[in-house]
Image (cartoon, rainbow over all chains, first blue to last red; front, side, top):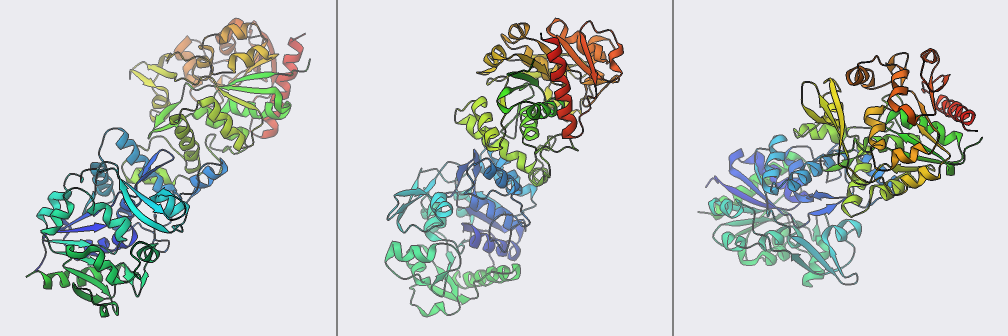
Length: 308
Length: 308
């Protein structure tokens, strides 16, 4: 079958690159991205949405491919000056990136919702896919560490470089899903979960009211963020053993999503584990834009086989 | 006599350069700058203080000498991105300049006063002179134009390039002088008025409660911002005829300040007018830092002759 309405759940870098592949594998009107906002935080008075920004910049082909975050050709003159003033410099705000935060913050202060602001910013960048924040209201991903107490996500991830071992992840605030999110899921014929960290990028979305119920009525296919027993990027490789006692494998991802999942796309070689779910092995590392598109196409083809 | 405590009233560029000369002509502890904040405005959610910033950057030797405003070597990547988002780009926020606005805005939102923030930022930039905003509370300089109604100062000055003819200038808000301003004036043995626009840079300071009374007890010497019948910079050359019907001369500056003034420093050749106040002619154009210092020294020497 060929899918007409696909919703993809996404966190930052891996999810954003997968979205970029989907955006070019599907007609523009077919793709809706629902993006984690649990990482959002206020820094220097600015409302920063790291995952939304990564998705926007990546879909607009403005993302820095080597660094993995922020804008390509970005400069950091403002940050350097913040440092000169002895201001807080632990979060690297780029100069062009600042424009995003300034316009977003100003609009939110004026009463606009994150959903409409995001649509406006995406439109200005020429992004055709629909990009929805998971929620307009605040939701904060909190990391309970073994030795350093509970830290807000960015504190743990950026300031502490994701080093403190994790005991649990929880979400503060119970916002409703943003307008259009549940509707998009209900109208979809396929839901994809990008290769994002399930604990801190996807679970915040799944924790919102009505999301799991909506997903239970749809075919859901995920792409594993674990490749050959390691996280492609970020702290997931350490988090799986810390949170489950099991080694970081694609199987751990399958178990985490459990009955929600119709199928899982894994890296060549990772299909040898027994998963209890349909598996498709392919190349999941997305270095070039062509690799993103190919992974998106492989995932869609696999999903088509699963959905009669 | 040699002055031990000098207060200088200042607007933007001309006043800031004169302050820079004073800062090097006087011992560090002798100089207090009181800076106009009537031009302050909120842009993209940021509290921007154009005159304070120009004073800070100039005293820190970070000011752009050629452009006349902003930081030397400044970049405008954020502004370019704001433009890409179709955001408001009429006010040129530099990337490093943004750090100043972000830190100031964040601190003000946290309840800090403009006075203490300014002291902190100046300290971080290594500025030894005391820099006081004229007021912590908001005061807005409004330009009543002949044909385009009443405009907030930055709207008139930047967005409309100071072109609409001016009928009157008025100040909205009646904040108290900032803590330390009247005290500094009372403790001073000389008050200087820099070569700033009297209507929009100095009058906002003079309009605050208690300032004129404090000045009336001190020797006050101004430096004329009019040279050879023209404003050195900015819209003053047009404003004088618009507001007084008289030609733009150093004499018009003397008449504007009236009995407040003990002496006026003017450009060579401008002393031929009858002023009704003590006059010292010297070179008042400050291109190099040496010229600033020389003008400051000449002004202090002239003032010393006036004060027995």
